[in-house]
Image 1 (cartoon, rainbow, N blue to C red):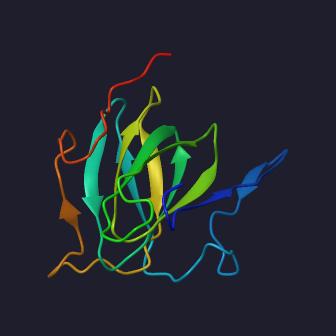
Image 2 (image 1 turned 90 degrees about the vertical axis):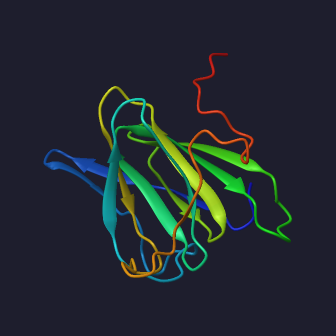
Image 3 (image 1 turned 90 degrees about the horizontal axis):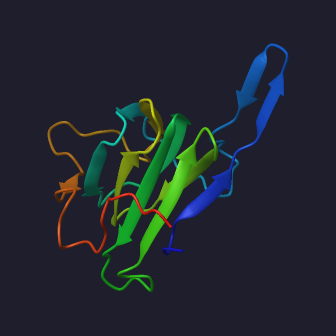
Length: 151
């Protein structure tokens, strides 16, 4: 596991009216601070990658569909530098994934319909000076291919 990455398995409470699922609580062991909450989506087969932040952590929770979220640790001095982590998240695996600052991340929609991801970063988005550093989705700088692997 990449240093600083945390996973929280979510509990779904269904009844005859519907269901309830808490995503993130202030008293969760993985929680640090709140900046804002927003939703991003991807259509089937679409890859949105790579980027990282210097000032914030992200908390991802896929609410609709399924996504393959991939992390790459390029941080200087990290004991897990060079490691890649894959997480299959969404309707069939409800989890929250904490992505620490400095870790490259991206995702691919692997469901047949649009997937919807809730992100709760620890900082608000700064429109004048965004804390986003990007690489293309298909780059040799990160040892990962987005192709589906049939085993």
